[in-house]
Length: 181
Image (cartoon, rainbow, N blue to C red; front, side, top):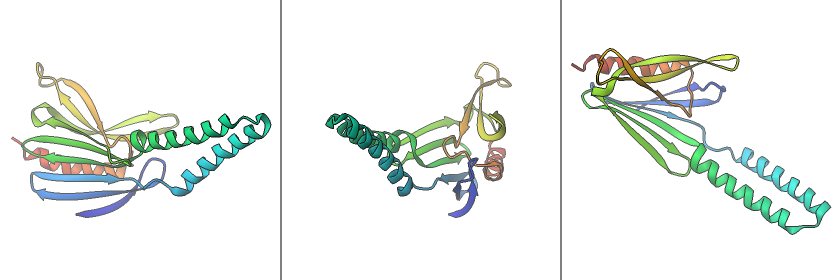
């Protein structure tokens, strides 16, 4: 597996892993950095100091208990529902595309798009606030009208890689899709 380092739209480092299983099958994995212990410690200490200040003025122990509970529940929810460790795209020329997201808690979400439903894979640009960001997207074919687009499935939504990384994945996907009859 060859790995290359890129950055996401926030400037954070991400790693693109490319594993070619055959000329018709390639897997791309975009990995984000792990959860920073320093950030977790800083946010936890901030919440607990604020709770201690409130406790100091109110002398109510429920404030400290609720701060600890909110912090622990917040961390569990963040790790289970928000923090994505890596996203993968498996392109199989004759079958379709499998998209997976693995969260820091170990939870994994996987979806599959059949090759008959895929019209094309494109790089789409979007204006977000004051910047232009790029997304790799799968265009879905309308069953009744083969030339129409039924929907758009954006890829790598959590890692948000920059254009250079997306172009590398796009070219490999187009190479595989061009071999499909």
